[in-house]
Image 1: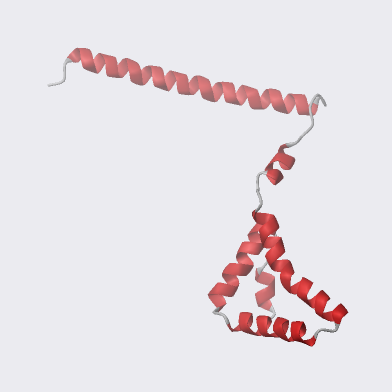
Image 2: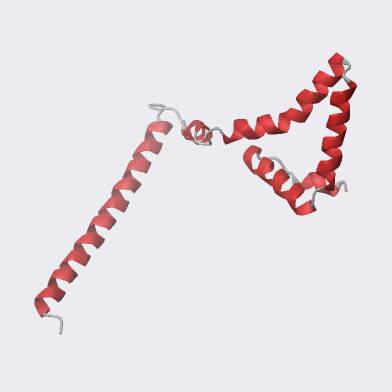
Length: 126
């Protein structure tokens, strides 16, 4: 059997944890209200979107680079009159179009999610 004293200690601990959690929630709510009030009064600038954008890390730049490679090859092939580069680019897109549709959709979906594009519009043309 569990001693009554142990039950009392567990109950007090649980009650204390619940009270502390409620105090935390209230403090966070008050802090958000105070922050919003300062934004409203012009005391501080609204920088949440800027912070959110910076939190994306380097993945956006990596995806942009990967997506830009065919464009860069096309520019290089056009201005240098290099037929090999153009042929390789054509082979790339031909091979990409032969990949399974689920992989194409996955690739386009990832790019779309990162940049907020509507990748589904691309498939409507097929």
